[in-house]
Image (cartoon, rainbow, N blue to C red; front, side):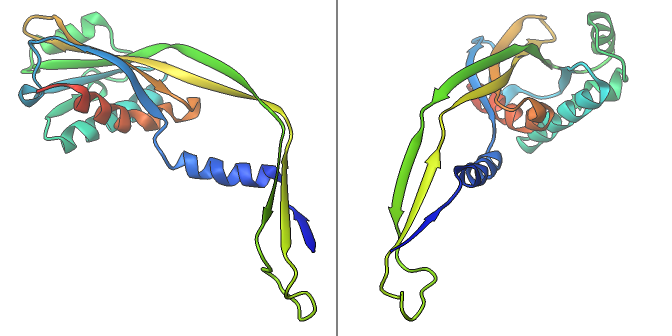
Length: 202
C-alpha cells in the first residue's frame, strides 16, 4: 500500500483562492422609512467618506456602476465637489443648485477582530491507484492530511450606509455592512450597492 502525505497548507491555499472569488461583504442589518420607495429612487448623489482620495474615488465609482445597472441615475461626489473630503457645507452647497433627490453616504464604522482556535485534525483518504505501475497497479493509495492546531483571526471593516431625502433632509434608510477582508473594502463597493438597493423595499 502506497502512502502519501499532502500538506494541509496546500489545501488551505486552494480553498482560500476559491473563497476570494466570492463577495466578502454582507449587510448585517437595516432600517427603512415608510416614505422611501425603491421605484422612486433617482438622481442620487453618492458620498464615500473614506480616508484617502484614491479609495474614495474607487468606492464611489463602484457604487455608481451598481446603481446605474439598476436604472438609477447617480452622481459621484468627487465629480461635483472635488478631491477634498466632503463636508456638510460642501455637500449642502452642491445640493442647493442641483436636482438631486437622494444622498447616499457610506462611512467607516470601525474594525472588528474575531479569533477562533481551530483544533488539530488528521484525516486519511483512500483513493485508488492514480499513478499505477505494472507491479503496483492493484495497490490502494492512501493520502493523509494533517492540520496542526492554530488560531484563526479575522479582521472585518464595518461600514454604515445612510440615505437621506434631500427635500426633507430626513434619514430614510440606514444599514450596516461588514467587509471580511480589509484590503478589499474599496473593491466591494459594487457588491455593497447591490445589497443596499436590493434591501430597499418598494
